[in-house]
Each structure stands twice: as C-alpha cells, then as structure tokens.
Image 1: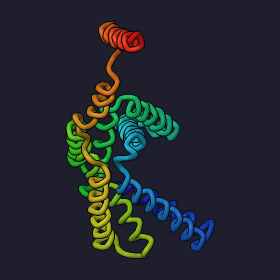
Image 2: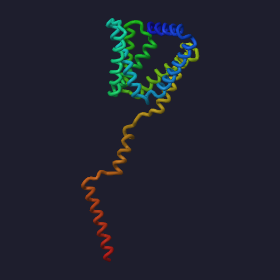
Image 3: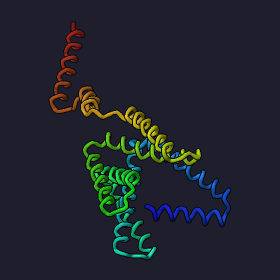
Image 4: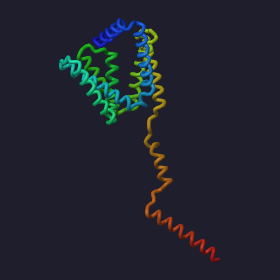
Length: 244
C-alpha cells in the first residue's frame, strides 16, 4: 500500500516537473470529477447495474490474485505482471458475466476486499489474509442474500469513492471530512436503492401468467368438441324457429 502511494506521488512530481503544476492540477481535477460521478452512480444504481459491476468485480479480483501470485513467485519482469493481470482479470470477468452466482460472489468479495484493505491498511501477511477472509465472507453472504448485501456493499464502496473524491476536489482533509461525506453518500445510496429495488414476490410475478392462462384456456379435444355441440344446438334451434 505504501509502495503504491509512493509510486503515485513520484508520478505526480514527475508530471509537475515536465508539464507544469497548473496543467497537472487541472488534470487531477478532471480525474477526481470522473471518479466522483462513478462513485455516485455506484452508490445509487449499484444493484441496477449488477451485470456491469459483476464483470468489473470479477476483473478486479482476478487481476489482484494474479498480481499477488506473480509477486510471491519473485518475478520482476513488468511484462509478466501485465500479461498475468490482464489475462486472469479477463477470465474472471467472463466467468462473472456467464455464471450469475459466481459473478455475485466475485463482486461482493472484491468490494469486501477493497473496503477491508482501505480501513485496515494491512502491513503484514496475517492482516492481508484477514482482508481476504473478509472478502470471502461477504461474497458467501451475497450468494444467499443477494439484494441486501449488494445494495449495502455498492452503497458503501460508492459512497467512499464519492466522499473522498469530493473532499479532494474541495481541498478538504480526508479525515474527518472525506469520511463524513462518504458516510452521507453511503446512507443516501442505501435509502435510494432499497426504495427503487423492491424484493420480488414469486406469487405476484406468477399471477399475470395464471390470469392469462385462465382467460385463454388451452384448446384440448374436449373443449373443441363441446364448442361444436353448442354450435350444432344453436343451428337446430334456429331451424325449428324458422319452420314454425
């Protein structure tokens, strides 16, 4: 985590020296604005965009696992890291898209993993393993309680992204302003998502089909025969009436 922060800081310093501080600041403002929109969308429409987030979560989990695996093998070649991350991420994204329950598990596990890494800041293998366990636990819960877990998880991760981005855009400190804004976004997102994503009732969903079947009965041989008898009896009545 510290290495990533140092890398981003060094890249920003290099950009400032080459391009200029004003251009870099404008570029970072645009980037944080895009991240803010992305976070708000995830916070409010996370459950509605489930398939997209499932693919994104699958790619994130696959890429992270590939990165950790290559890192533990002691490989220092950048091309190996890039190929392993891209190939494994794409494979997991395809699996998440094709297999619904696998996608739900990977999405929730990725969100749990990301949130635990952000709040715990693992510096040892034991803490990192604990973050993995948190992700697995959240993914398992999501398979059983898909709607509730994913609404809460997408609201939390979206609120965190939106709150931190907004605090950066406003020049506010991440603690406590960024966390406070994140909590507000997350709570608002949960309220909106639970309101617009009502639980499905299987009996209510089946009622329209039953009504259609009752209004339009299946034409069996018996029904056709009965209909023929009715037509025949009506013709006999008309004939007897005309004879009189």
